[in-house]
Length: 208
Figure 1 (tube, one colour):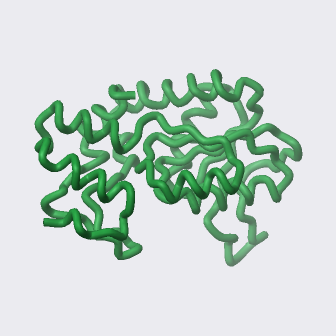
Figure 2: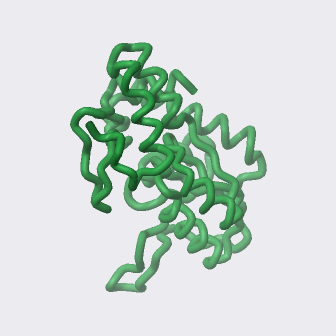
Figure 3: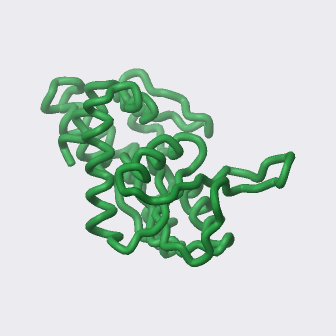
């Protein structure tokens, strides 16, 4: 959805800097940085984006019985969606707690509950897939995974295909780039280099 891409750009939840690349935690040089947690600070935009997520859930997963957020960025979005949809909600940790009951999932375990996992964004899809598998191991039935944004990397497509999880995002990298060009946030000359990065993030030939 172009409207979602515009919102993310306008509130600077997503920033494009092809001339001054960001360095991700993995060490990869990237022309983009995404922090959808900023959406929480903008009530009007937050309501619009989360309503669109709720609509996708109603359309694609009408039988949903449980919302599961991913720690940490997916937790607040999952909580808001659960409230909108009047559904129970829990969240899944990236690793088990080192104390107490050592749980990876917080919330009531409902064996067999048809569940949608909520993420803020997809990069390679690895952490999202791991979270969904953890949810399944606890006895839930995962219907799919939903995020606000995806970098639309080829690696993510391969990973989701292999894992077999249905997945959706409100907007994606190509759509975001298109809106950024329309709004004059980046030049048309940057588009080709941005696409080189998207197809192969480890290829640094796009950096000028």
